[in-house]
Amino acid sequence: MDFFCYHRDRVGSTPLRQQLVESHWSYMDDFQDRMIARGPTFDDETLTGSVHVLSLPDPAAARAFAFAEPCYQAGAYRDVMIRRWASLSDRTMPDPSVGADDSERFLVLGFTDAPTTQRVDAPDRPGVIVCGELLSDDGVHVLGTAALVQPAVAGDVRGVLPERRYAAVEVHRWDFGGRR
Image 1 (cartoon, rainbow, N blue to C red):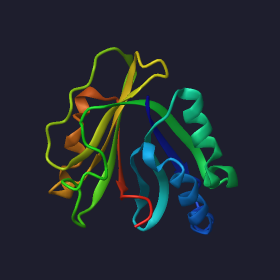
Image 2: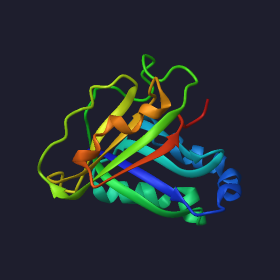
Image 3: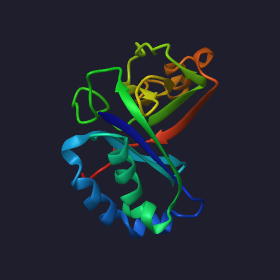
Image 4: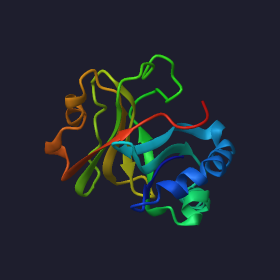
């Protein structure tokens, strides 16, 4: 079972996050073989969050993963979104054919106005690194979509998820995470 976890930073928590970077990476090393994608979100150069898409046995394991994370434990995050993830592509972040250059990358989140059973079509757009449905814990209802993208033109980011399908669309700068 795959899960999308998005820890969102408390305002002013960047110094604490920087202090804990090695603890964070060490914690994530234990899950490396289950990672589909990961990385920080930014506003200009300020950290705003941390995204992890990974395979875990069940929703309880996803919550345990999210809440035991060192930055969460230290109070760096204001909240965490945990959703089942249904991949809409066969790619994963380490796939060398996507996202290889230094262009800007983004996390695009689309949220439905109510839970629905209407499935989402995979975006047929160049630059999509990974994309998946955000589902209820039981996997029955679609609650939104998350995409990690590297569009050819930065202004083209919102078009990855058609706004007519979602009650709200968020765009966050994002980059590959983990040890380099």
